[in-house]
Image (cartoon, rainbow, N blue to C red; front, side, top):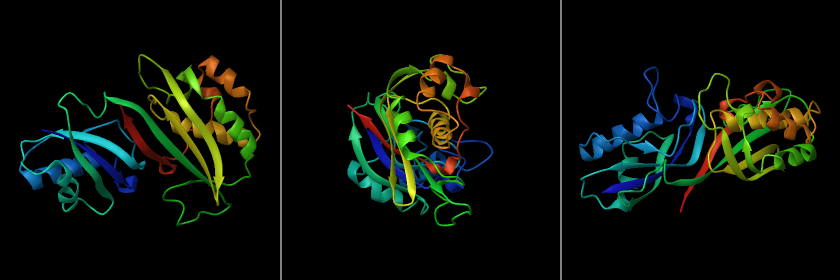
Length: 244
C-alpha cells in the first residue's frame, strides 16, 4: 500500500530534505525510521526539496510498504524512531497513482523577518534579522505584484538550470504580527530559492531602495541582478502542500 505522511521538522541540523553525500538529510532520517519499523528499505518521496536550514510545518511524502501496520498508526510508530526535531504528524493510505510531488496542486511558504540591531537568540532559529526599519505598507503593496501567472526567471538562483520558469501565484501577503514581519505566499510551484529571493526583494522595497511598482519591471526583465538578495534559509518554512 502507498502511505502519505505529513511531516513537521526543524531544518537547522540537516542538509535539507533530500539525501546528500555530505550531510544528514530529513529524507534519510525518515527512510531509516521506516527500515527500523518495518524492516523494509523504501524510498520516501517528498513533495519537493527544502534547502539546508529550511523548516517545515507541513511537508508531505509517500512510500510504498508491504507492512500490515494500519495506515493511521504509521505516524506514531515512526515517531518512536525519529529525532525530536523531525516528527510525522499524520499518516494515511492513498491510491497507488497518488504521488507526493506530481499530484500536489499548490504549496504555501512563509518567510519570517524581525528588526533588531542585535541578534536575538530565541528568534534567530526561525527568523531572519534585518537591522534597519522597513515600510510594511510598501512591502504589502509590492507583494501583490507577485500574484498571477508570471515568468519568475529573475527570482531563480543564479546558475540554476530549469526549462520552464513560469509559475502561478495564488496569493501573496505581508503582515506584521508582534515583533515579526511575515511574508506568506501560495503558488502552483516554486523555483530554486524563489521565495527567499522574493523576500529579499520585499526587504529592498521596505528599505526604500525599490518601489512596489518596480516589481513589474523586474518580472518583465528576467534579470536576477535587479531583484533582491537571497535571504537566509532559517527564515523560511514550508507551511503546507495541498492536493485535490
